[in-house]
Length: 288
Image (cartoon, rainbow, N blue to C red; front, side):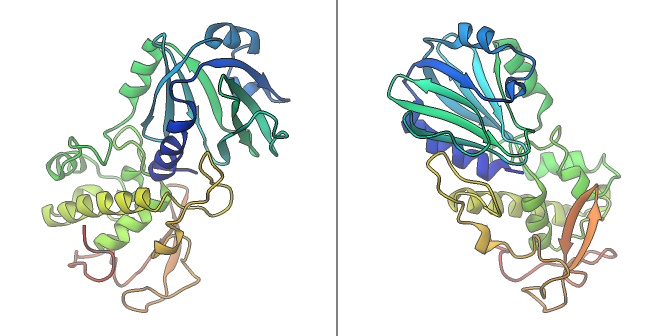
């Protein structure tokens, strides 16, 4: 599933293509559910002629702000893709929606699994979405002190806690595994058992991993591409994600292990990330 770096990459790739341009029409394919419970004609009546003022990201959501205070909210889910292409291009594979703009481009949404949604919402809905999502991990409010205070209240497994979108908005399976490995913290440690030093290290490395992944334009395993069709470039920098049971630890050479935490496949090093007493982390990827 696209996480913060991938959604941010899509956002940046769309800015010079649709910001300032007006919606001329929209087309829906054989899956009208892409618009949620809305009828195509109702959505078209509201957005037709509206201009895009800005494009924002909130956690794993993309918000396309229109000039009447409403927004088109896109949730890519597992296999959703946004592509900005010339109108004369043939339909994309698994294409469900095309928003036509006055500059001759279509913003097309394709999704093999049909889990993603493109929803037109009003201002109150935007506020409610913002309120149910946690802090942005790359913004100033996400401090080590704030994280330590929140983790102190959580007896659950640290990986499960970090994946809670109501606590931290945008973190997902890839970057949680990578951050925990770099911080030397076992994914099944109780969140409230982390020392102050461990929390500070984890906080620093979450931000470092996310910044590097944004700079690398995200991670592509199968379907992720930005709006211009470019694949993410960060995959080669991953140290443990998806490598459990397949490769040695890049730090100590111990075989990486794979387990399931909170229903999510999880890779870790049993030596560098012990479940017992905390140890100091060192090695590749441990700098901000």
